[in-house]
Image 1 (spheres, rainbow, N blue to C red):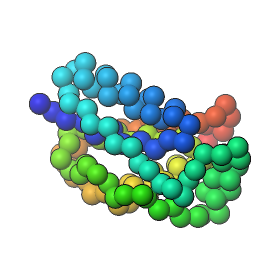
Image 2 (cartoon, rainbow, N blue to C red):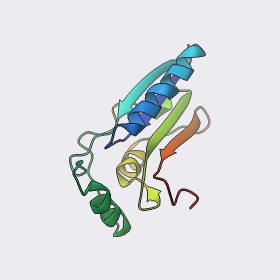
Image 3 (cartoon, rainbow, N blue to C red):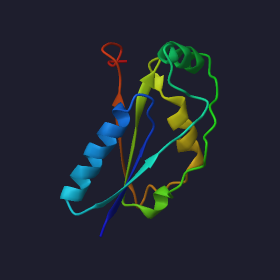
Image 4 (cartoon, rainbow, N blue to C red):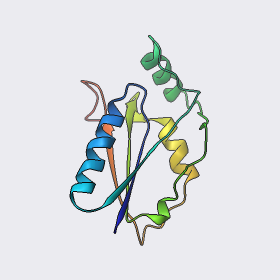
Length: 123
């Protein structure tokens, strides 16, 4: 049975909802879906989290993962990444995970889903 890895990062829970929907679609097509949540204690939700993390993203601050990638993307036929947009950029927590993992582009098909607020998405 083909397998899909769905990797996501979320502060608000929106990316988790999309990851669950993507997993359900894979399962409808007889593809085993494994979901992996990226965690970073450096990024915590708060009243001003969006402004804080947007500023840190724009200044190039680095985030640390709480743990390295759990699943090896090379072992999956499909890999889908998901995260919010922070300051018109890919969420840096996802970027750290992407750089820590290894890939086999000859074997794996890749996809992504990105959530953003009501403006700036066209960038």
